[in-house]
Length: 234
Ligand SMILES: [Zn+2]
Image (cartoon, rainbow, N blue to C red):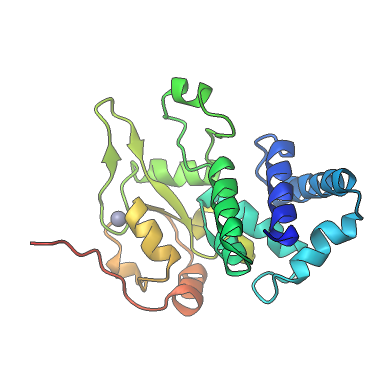
């Protein structure tokens, strides 16, 4: 197992403890500084060698601690797997892979909606029940229906589930604003994250809020790669 991955994961875990549910880039960055100091103290090494040195090794995927914070924020708000996948690319052995998957599953993203039954929240540590207010507002506009296919998930008690997708990822300087967010089903969220669909306003099944042309353009230019279709056996 590599010390680099191990210490980065310790810092991620520390950030999640310190941020106390606060989801802003500032909160993540302050928590990261605290967590880094703790890991350094515990391991009797300098704070410089804990994160700065390790993050330099993640180039070109992550250039600096600011980008690291942004990627972690994207994970916590959107469930973006970018940071996890970058760490996996830099793994040394299979122990690293296992540690990375475990670390990311214990630091859960805020993908759970406030309508989630409260008893489930009590029994689950590290599970945050809030969406960012932007994500929640956009989901409410669409009644939790996917803007691309119109489908939604519902249980027998009327609980609805949808996901918020940031067209320009927070980790790449995209803002957490309505105009950068789409309400989508989990399948379209994956398709969007993998760049599997080109977006044109006329292709939206539902379009009830002002989605910025700039961010749609960002998606089409920087994220879209090739079409991904959901297939079914007949
Ligand atoms: Zn959909």
